[in-house]
Length: 222
Image (tube, rainbow, N blue to C red; front, side, top):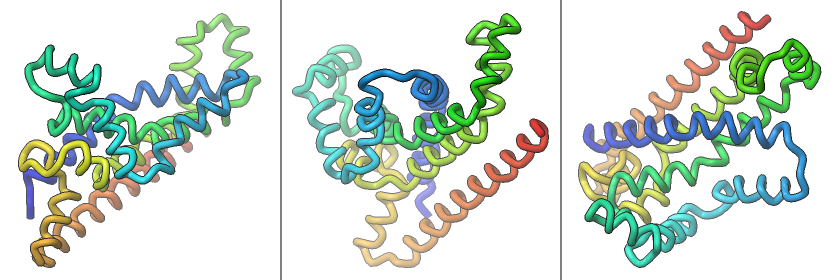
């Protein structure tokens, strides 16, 4: 069992969830409540990572954040090392690649909040922020929670983007998915099976906990 790779994957998934949680709430709410001419285009751009092959997405990440890019050059000047083939580079790619999983379920959650409820909150003098935290978010929380579970699980199992953006540097960019691939390439089927079963167990436990928490929240709101 490659514990270093597993802990690195859990760390990457945790940071990705932490960054995307507020973005999921704010972006999902904004897309749910606002109507504008380019909304379809914006939603299509958000969903684009979902339909692109991971290697294609990873290739464009390399172009966008490599040493010869403006962002990569700025990062090199500020921190003294390149962004690609680092944990920070993996995190940037992971956040962007998981945008569809973070935003769409939250958007659907906020769309399910009745308009009358939001209008009643405004009539009661609640500011938009107080309405969000006191009224809307508790009602839309199952969608937000689903988004975070999808982000966490998808990050744990991501392979193509991670390999393109970070390579396979032990302790730095070698995640559990890449470690499984390396074990298979080395004909270590037992090691690959153990790590694969561990990922399945973690994903199953996460999804089960989500269903239980969603049911508890539903009973409280009911």
